[in-house]
Length: 334
Ligand code: NDP
Image 1 (cartoon, protein in one colour):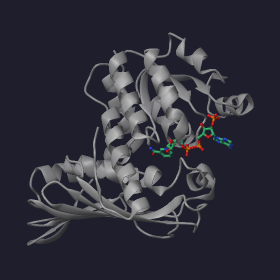
Image 2 (cartoon, rainbow, N blue to C red):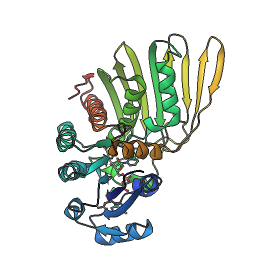
Image 3 (cartoon, rainbow, N blue to C red):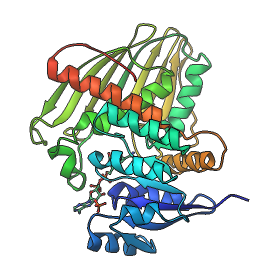
Image 4 (tube, helix red, strand yellow):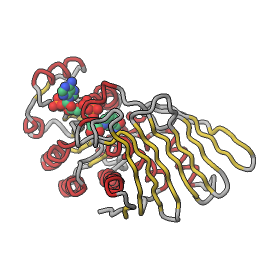
């Protein structure tokens, strides 16, 4: 019998509407009782449209409600810190959107406060929840292509107008903290390591209000002298996303796998030719919520922890610094 988990949504967001509300509700004994919005009318409409019984503009009301065990924070990025720390101090488990914060010391403080309060902090890095990436990780670990040489990540797309608001116009947006940060987390997951040095150049002004970045190319050096290249963009139409991992005895290729959807094809190329590795796809967000819910019930750990969110932010900020200064930056993980 699963212990019930009653959720509050902090933020009447698009990502909750599209993915997370459903992902919470498919978990056993899990329900959403309220949503926080800064605007009473929008909050009430959001609750009505999504079948949530209650909405509020008061975070305190949510945090003092002893029937709520977990919160999902998906407000705009500058609000995450204050809301996560308040939730932790009230004893709520937290699934927080990426980037955890805009500043590294803020993110580290969030992780520390959650640890101190004895609550779970997870970061919603969905790509590591993809069945294709999980299979790719297993293949790399079992030596399918031998020692790694280099990696290329392709994550260019055209941001829809519906999502363009703060992403392209605010200091809290930009492709590095919004999209490249997911690539970084995926690489950390696949390679079980973090880069030591990074170099990055960005574009802006094609769709963004300059200097907010709307395109980036980055090179990262991982331990073992493994070079990684990332291309991520909000201004490129029709490009397939993917990842190519080059090893001493073969190459693994993920096609169309940098997606929120359960999609993509995985190939192994080596001396015997090319073969497709069958993938049994699952909903990435269902998987993330399943891991989070199990962790809340004392079983295992979330797919991406708070510390994973701190690390991905540290590396994304190092890329930002490199783009601003034109220099290679040594990554400092807290
Ligand atoms: P939204 O813009 O949809 O929501 C962010 C905030 O904006 C909401 O909390 C809401 O404030 C406010 N808002 C929403 N709609 C409107 C509107 N029509 N007019 C005015 N204000 C509005 O953001 P996203 O859902 O795209 O992103 C939210 C968070 O989730 C971000 O941190 C983002 O980085 C992350 N994200 C993660 C994804 C993932 O797959 N892991 C995917 C997409 C986003 P209020 O709550 O006060 O009503």
